[in-house]
Length: 98
Image 1: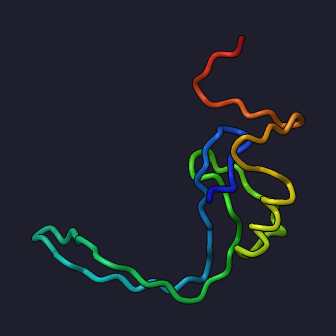
Image 2: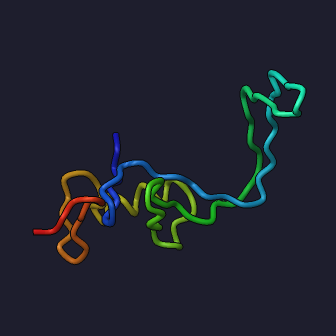
């Protein structure tokens, strides 16, 4: 279920921005120039800095720092598909205003 719809661009995908994360990557191939192809990755630790729209970077309230709080925030504010926030109407990019 997708609960998010960006009030700035209409995108429905969020990304979690974290710091202090340890990432381990499987290298599946390495060419002569040193370019690597990667397989699976694992992540450990880290602190969520923010949740933001993957398209335009609009950020969710900075007090939201885990997925449980994110769920509560989205459902309480009704920032999701089909909702119209009259204080911040959704205006998709590249659509001329009438």
